[in-house]
Amino acid sequence: MTDAHNVIATLDRWLAQGWLAPLDRAFAGFLREQDADCPDELLWAGALVSRQFGRGDICLDLARLSHNPEQVLALSDAAALADLPCLDTQQWRAVLSTSVLVEHGDGAAPLVLEGDKLYLRRFWRCQQTVYRQIQRRLQPVHDNLPDKVATAVHSLFAGNSENPDWQKIACVLALRARFAIITGGPGTGKTTTLTRLLSLLVQRALDSGQHPPAIALAAPTGKAAARVSASITSALARLDASDAVKTHLPRQASTLHRLLGSQPDARRFRHHAGQRLVTDIVIVDEASMIDLEMMAALLDALPDAAQLILLGDKDQLASVEPGSVMGELCAGAERAAYDAASRAWIARYTGTVLPAPADEGSPVNQQTVMLRHSHRFGADSGIGQLATAVNQGDAARACQLLADQAQHADLTHLILHDAADNRLKTLIRQDQPDRPGYGGYRAIIQNQRPKAEENPAAWAQSVLASFDRFRILCAVRQGDWGVESLNRLIERWLFPQARPGIWYEGRPVMVTRNDYNLNLMNGDIGITLRDGASRLRVVFPGDDGLRWLSPMRLADVETAYAMTVHKSQGSEFDHVALILPTAPNPLLTRELVYTGITRARHRFTLITANPSSLAAAITTSGHNV
Image: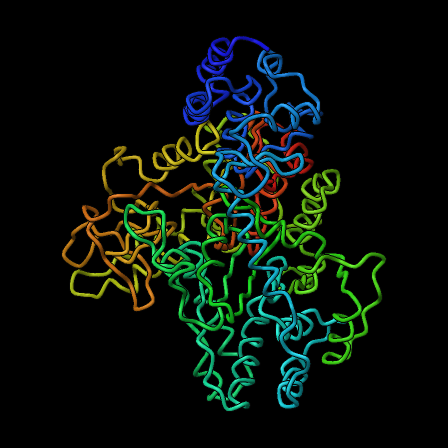
């Protein structure tokens, strides 16, 4: 072993090179303070597990680290890789097991070694909480369905022509246990399925003489919650159910933070294992955005008898925070590997006889249904086919689709070597009915302004609607092709008189932190306009109409012509332009590209400077460990 001072000096060099974050280096120092005689390899392991946490992984996979450190750490610098201890998996496990700072289960040590994976204690506990709580809810709690409910199942889905009818199967599986997952791509009917399921749950309670269940509807972000609320309201209008049932169905979603009761300057929520939520059913939409710590907090706060229903697209980007919970829970969902008991239940209440799988799925798989038929994208949709190719890791097919723009008019691929390219400027400023850019909302601001005596609400609403038809999505924040640079460039193109950092009419802004006093959530977007008194106000859409707020009241906002793909989750636009950076980047993954594509309703434009960046992203999976 080398001298511990030399290890610390090497970690300091990693910090200076940007290979470690200050927190990673500090954690290694903390370990050394706790045990001055700890092995050098432990200091490395501590710094690296902290580094992985910063990249969104909940653990350090020692087996993968031994075999392919470049891929695990996303480091290509030969000098950095040469610094790492040269140990195989067994040697890593042996040396870590000798330290008092590492334990193999419950305890107080800062690190936990479980098999070949090394965890920070806090995230190991979160993982145990999620596993334990979900396992408790998976056991069927109903042996049969009341006749009225069984009849209502067939009635609600009588108009469906798909075979198998996965929406119907999702409902009957969710009716037998206290946990269910409904996953599927955009337009597969997740919200429609949910409203029908909730009507069945309410009807079952009413028919048995019980109080209707208390139902909480939530989403990870304010933007997602607003979209869920709108989608639920629309789906309820089409729901074939009695008014007695509809009265008890939720229409308004909240953020998970608000549901659990976030407290200023505290990690702990108001609702937890010692003070549970008062609810019978919790539904979380856009569940792919939930990180491990939030999922653990939610499950801890659920009453033992409450039911949890998760909805989302398992193939979308995982949360920015550590832990790809939805992706892990849905592993194998596409195989529909139901056991004999699940297949018998499905056959009994849907009439569908599913074939026996070669291998039965996990207990979670028995309560998971993947919706497969897209009602948004037809068979000839270029966007739909492109999303499928990317999701399947078929880079050649994706490139072929983008190249054949004569066949797929909804797809465009621009190869630009410079962000100042006039083709990008034209794309941004255009205003065509089938190819919207930002020219439309700018024209409404400049040419359709109401007279001083007229109410500006309708005008403002049309500005917001026009702006939301188009969006620039980026993989990264910094660099020539990042959010910050592009926002400055687009600002100059659209409003050349604007000065950076100064409020001006037309400036779109995104809220970057929840503000419960103003009822603004992280991800909410407003546009700066002049009100009837010619005062600058930022206009936000709301459930009760438009809200006109002084810019001086908005502390945490940023210009929002361009936004990251992560920030776009939970949103949809008529036209999306996705810009991929030139240089390789750990953020550039299949899930990022898929998520960007599926934000588009009618038209998708891919912009790359390096033609190979798309193929590289498609062949790289980025689900967090």
